[in-house]
Image (cartoon, rainbow, N blue to C red; front, side, top):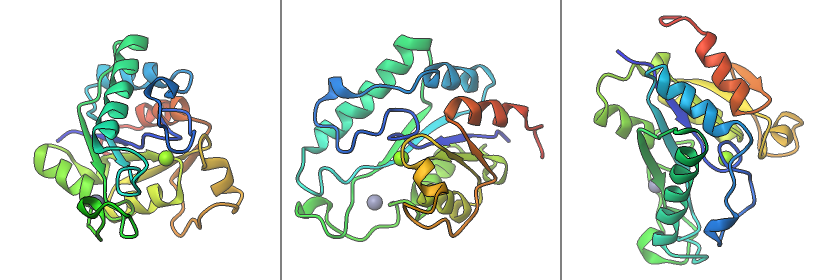
Amino acid sequence: MRRAVFLDRDGTLNVEKGYIRDVDALELYPGAAQAVRQLNDAGMPAILVTNQTGAARGYYTIEHVHGLNRRVAELLMQEAGARLDAVYFCPHYKDGIVPEFTRECDCRKPAPGMILQAARDFPDIDLAASFVVGDKATDITFARNAGCRGLLVRTGYGEQVLAGEYQILDVQPEKACADIVEAVAYILSQPAGS
Ligand SMILES: [Mg+2]
Ligand SMILES: [Zn+2]
């Protein structure tokens, strides 16, 4: 069985800028690509799991969401030869305005749908030994709901979450890390089977 790392996108891999309408505005945090490369080199699947409601809200098209995800992958590759093993996103939003994506679903974080789908696609992933890295309280609840270990980064909304100014941490993270670089260092320091 393998340990995987489920990575949030906005505020974790790329700089939190709200809804990104221009693909060229997307930028990775310093060291993020190198951190993902370390996961690649360690043989740990790096899997993107992201809520993307922009299309449901009518801010942009679903093609644009795909374009943003592609841009993240492109920057990871350019900056460090890093790759994502899979990308899952939830386009749904119950209060959206675009009918196709406006509904309740079981894949919007903190519901565990995206990780459960990944576990079906990669049956050798040991969820209990796998990690979620994200900047919101919902990412930590998502980890708990999927039976994974949750690490909060202080980038994006993370600092506000820790200060009690954004969302409520109903589940405590295993560790609060400065950024994805520190989170990956922590993950790689954990012995397999711990
Ligand atoms: Mg985020
Ligand atoms: Zn969904």
